Structure formats: C-alpha cells, structure tokens
Length: 397
Image (cartoon, rainbow, N blue to C red; front, side, top):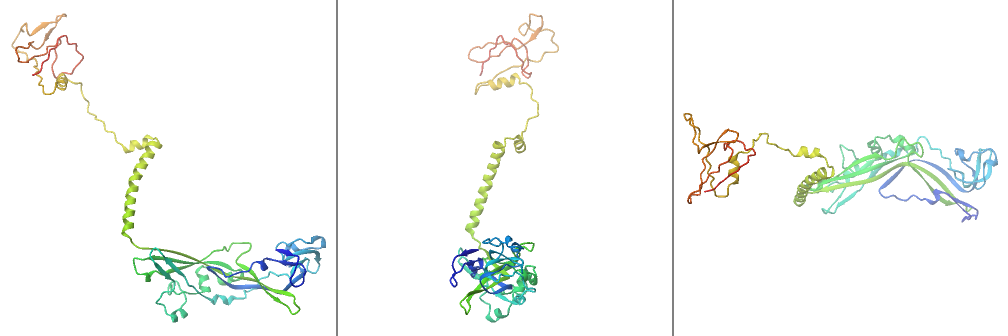
C-alpha cells in the first residue's frame, strides 16, 4: 500500500493499494472461471471506519489509533480517531471499506455447466511431425455436440467445468465457495513407427492447492472498475473474485525405430560391460586391498601327491650332455651258490665290513667306455643321500 500527496481530482491525499497497482491480465496457459465474489460499490477516496472484522483496527479510545499508522490487513491509514459506533479506528483510504464476507451459497453455482474448448499444438522437430488435439477427421457438428468423457469420448476437445472437477475427485459446490487451482495435464506419447493419426493426447486433472490449508485457502484476487461521478469525483467499484483456475501443462515424447541407434547402443553396451569388469577388479584388488575377493575369484590348486627324494639314475639322466648316452652297470645279483667273492669284486673297509661294488675298468683304446666306481656301495634306484666320492670317473659314448 502506498500513500501519495496528490490526487488528480481533488488534490487531497490519495491511497493506492494492491488493487490499484496490480491489474490482472490474460494468463498464458491458464484460465480462470468465477464462482463467487464480494462487491464493494461506489468507493471514493476519503475517511471512514475500518472493517469491523479486522481485529487490528479495534479500539476503545483515540489512544488506540495512532495517526499515520497503516492498519495491518486493512484498507487504509489511521487518522487518530476511534469511531465509537463501530469500535474501530477511522482510516484514510477508499471508503466505504471493504467488508470481507463471502456470500452463501456461492453466487455463480451455474458455472459448473460452463464449457471449455481446449486447443493444443505440439511439434516433434526431430521427426518433422506436428500434431494438435483436434483430429482432422472430426466434423464441426460433432465438436459442437460432444462432451469429453474418459471412456466413451476420450478425444473430444470440449470439457464441462463439472466434469473437470469430478475427474480431480472434488465437489464443485465446495470449491466454488473459496476457489481452487487445478492442473490440466495434456500428455502426448507417440510411436511414430505407426501412422501419425494414432498420435493422440491423453488428459488428466489434478488439484494443485491443498484442502488442508488454514490461511488464505483457495484462489481469489481483486479487481476494480473506475468511473467518474456526475459531480466529478473519482470513484471505483471493488470486486473480490473467487473461482477455479485451470493451469495447463503439456508433456510429450515421440520415438521411431532406428537401426543406426540400435547398433550404437549395442556397441556402447558391450564396451561398457568390458570396462565394468576391469574397473570392478581394479577397485577390489587395489583400492579395497582385501584378500576376500582374491580368495573367491582365484582357486589355488596344490599337488597332494607326496614326492620322494631323487635317485642317482634321475640325477645322471638330467645331468648328461645333449646327445650323449650314459652307460651305467648295476651290480649283478649274487650267486646264491657262491660262497666267496673274487678279490677284484670285494674288499673290506677299515672297520672290517665288506662292501660290494662295480668292477673297475679303465678306458682302453678309443672305446670311450668307462664306469664310475664309488667308494660306497649303493643301487641306482635307491634314494640319494649325501655321499663323499673319493674317486669318480665317468665317460660318455
């Protein structure tokens, strides 16, 4: 609220409130239908008692009305006088003050029979397709008589206010008293692999404001018509409108099969699957640093067969030069009938024990034949133990 020091008609102080400064204009993507209103006729700038319903303007003496103080939620500025007849402060503003009492029942109950014709256009530039909610095969006679019904007539563009409120699960007689806001949703979901004639909208109605609101419930606004009286005084008629506001919201999507897109998506998916495996392994192995993942992913196999110590035969075969043939003679089995041994094939150790070995032969001519004669006796298939060889002579063929 703003108070100025001039008036175009009288030159006296003038008070400008929100009704004077905010002028409702035609809204984009919305429509408002009046169901109830409060009228304060023939207001003019002057002094008058404040509305008795305003608790911030009540008084008993002039001391309760500070001059120049704006009345909270009121219609003007206090003049410093208390009007005993009303028990409220006198104000300087548009008089008489508005009395905010809603008529019961609502004045425009017949507004439920109003009809709204909806025209909606959508375009899908990617596919060079344009559509509207009124199919081309509809006739004018049909449009003039049809009324939208979600089952029997889902594509009729004519809607009754009563039908829209019922689709939102609300009662018109209730919302008409204080007003309400509804969302009018138009949804396009088109499969352009088929004919564009099948690309048609679906409608949904939802209430946007809450029925549980305690303060400033519903939807309303004020508007004033200004005119000049015969005596030249500037006057206005103030209206406070209650009604139903429909806000239109459009959502749309369309698609068409493309082999190129399919190939790209498949390739990307395959590539991401490979990268995902590597990334998961990296995170679990190097970042988490836990052995639980390794134990579950890798299986360690051990040979449970016990291996004995190597034998001389295997050691000599592994140590022979490439292409050589190792000639080794085992001791011949003893003759059970023999009672003695030749001196060449038997000898006694210092401790008196008899050892049995291989006949010693030295190389003769170019035969290249030789036999190693160890100091200790052992068999080729016996396990090898640490043995000290004093004389060993091995030759290869």
